[in-house]
Structures are given as structure tokens and as C-alpha cells.
Image (cartoon, rainbow, N blue to C red; front, side, top):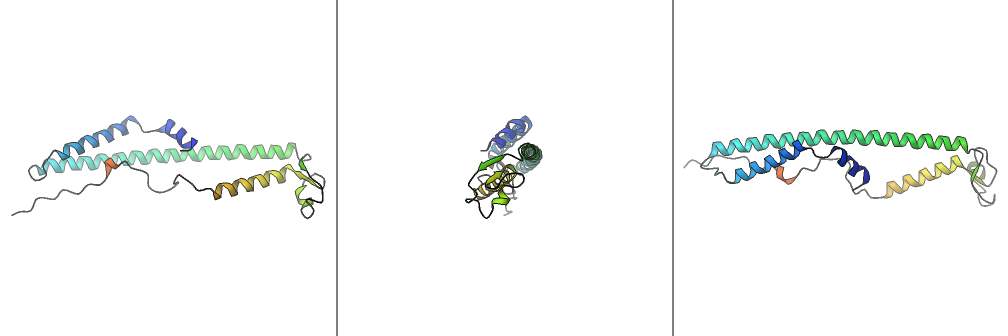
Length: 173
């Protein structure tokens, strides 16, 4: 699990109402196993409808929480990108004439003028070019890494809420 996921769980984890709903569904399912569908069909159907309603409410609450987590994640990512962008602009402004790396002009021969842009001498690599190269390398590295967490798709729902068969009346003989 990644650090942002852990932070989001700590901030907006499962609430007491959700835990209570999940526990109530589990209790109702246990009660449903003790009821004979043939002998007490009305009670069985009533408990089954209550389980279905509570399961649906739980799923809606989980969906609301996941939407809130996505909003927080989006805002945090935006803030981080803004801070990094401002820091890059400041670095370029502050150190535009200072080289990050000085090499022999022969080593950077075909690309020497591009690497020294703006304001460095031939054979030197400017801050702006260096930040661009670092950004490209980092983006290539992150895009080549496999993602362990599925970003989109249905949310995980505990197996307590698996769909059960709809009760059917016993055959009339």
C-alpha cells in the first residue's frame, strides 16, 4: 500500500455507521440461516429484503467515501504539481546563468548549444535543460513501472455482501 492510500484511510476510513451496517448485515445473514425458507417464508423474505436494503445502503456509503477520497487525492496532486512547478521556475530564474554540469565541448558537440541554453557557455548544461531531462527520465521510469493498485474500476466490497439467491416459494404438490 502506498503512503497516500494509508493517509487517506487514516483521514477518512470506514466510519462507525458503516461498521455497524456491516455487522448488522452479518447478524441478519446469520439469522437467515436459522430460518426455514419452506416453513417461515414470510419471515425469511422480510429478512432477505432487509439484508438487501442494508447492503445497498452500505455500498452507497462506500461509494460516497471513495468519491471523497478521489477528490482529496486530486487536490493533493494538484497542490504538489503547483509547488514543484513554482520551485522549477524559481530554480531556472535564480540559476539561469550557472551551469549544473561542465563538460568538454567535444563531448556535447552536436547538442552543445541546446544543452547550454539559456546563458551558459558551450560544454555546460543549464538548469532549465537539466530539469527537463530529469522530468523526462522520471516520467519514463514511472510509466514503465507496473502499477500494483488498480486505479479505476469497481470498488472492493466485502464478501459479506455477495448476492444471495432470491427466495422462491416451495413447489405446490
